Image (cartoon, rainbow, N blue to C red; front, side, top):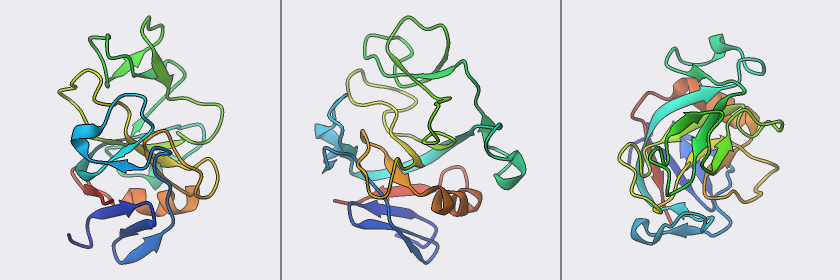
Length: 169
């Protein structure tokens, strides 16, 4: 592992020589082969940051890398294993189960997309494993990795596309 890797565990995270508190899934950290849709677990292993999404009404684009993409009210993420667009961004209206990316709460104001089961999604292997803002300190997620808003806003501009997210048990 290198200082350029974002390394996370249930105990915290490390990036560019700094330590951060973080949250992981309520189901704990599981081996990748055991990860299933809806298990609320965070998959262990090496993942990569493949996208950054943000709410332009809540975060200024100038504070983020040029490759960050704005999200709006019609932006969704499919979490339905029966959907041909499973574990991909979709637009409303969408007839399959999905997560709304433009939430009323601040959790998805800034969202890092990982390559977990993406872009070639295997149905049922888990969707929407993001890095996002936590609900409250150390409160478990549905499988994502979460940080305080302040910490994620520090981390985000220092990432590049392809930065490794190392999730360790």
